Length: 161
Image (cartoon, rainbow, N blue to C red):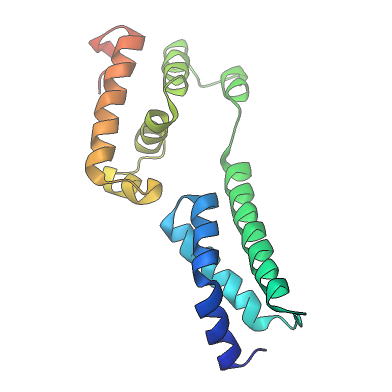
């Protein structure tokens, strides 16, 4: 385990680098803070002896990038299903639901995300704003615009909620 002096020096020297790397990869403040803490915890518990400052900095960069990739992989692999898999499943998807699902999935990403989180995962706009790191009013605007796009794609008012 490292001394308090070593830990404080490393925090002063590498905290900005670690946070920036996390934000670049994760684009989320909360996940950034989680990974930041994990990286420095690994440093505290690590017994690695660094040859020089450059070696230490490279270690922080590599550990940070790997932790970010691990987080992204675990999140997306456990929650991602291909469109073909969903649409080709036998069972409860009626033709109307299939049409709605295809319309939702054809929306641009920023609209698709808020629609999915709101209607399929049943998150509120404030919760979505925290998840996506967007302003609450932006989420409301994205929802309103996506509803309008879906109305146009699906042909009118019959699909309104």
